[in-house]
Length: 144
Image (cartoon, rainbow, N blue to C red; front, side, top):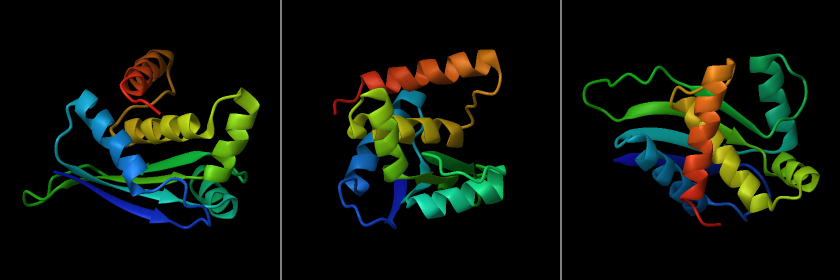
């Protein structure tokens, strides 16, 4: 069972729970994950900036932040992977810079954050190659 808790703290309603469920469930299938919980939170520039400053020491807005939990299964309960925070305004700015559609950027951010919550990282060259290869594999299976 996959449990997704969705919160939208922005004014926009373009990206909802169904949008993220499709992405997360597909990514989970590619990774072979079957039972977990995750929270997906859409936030504004001010909130993502505050989170980025507090937890990463970068006082600037960013597009996505992930906060993994320990991933331990307690009493046969669903494993809670953690919290994902996405800022659609920063994503739109990213789209403007790259020429991609905002929808595709949001998909990439959801996949990227989910991979972090699943234990993947890109701090070392080998890890980066693995993570970005998985990210592209997951993206190719989605049509947006």
